[in-house]
Image (cartoon, rainbow, N blue to C red):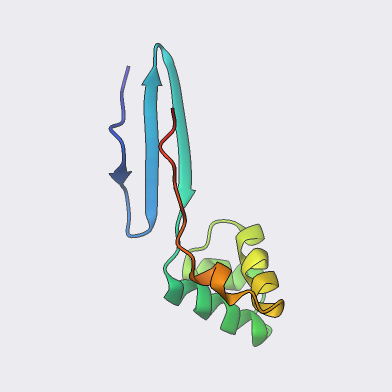
Length: 91
């Protein structure tokens, strides 16, 4: 059985966490995007660029994430966009 060491960095903004728990393999992928990507995505959406195009150009994996950034921006909760992702180690 292949075991992934924790954490391993696969690309510039993807971190995978894995653990072998007595024969049960747990793997969770969390993506943390740099501030520049988040702000560029918001700018593009404000310019009426379609969601799919923004995702393809910037490498965003989930449209819900983009919508969440837009909601935070529109509500004035910019501090949420600036906050880095907290990834707790799985127990």
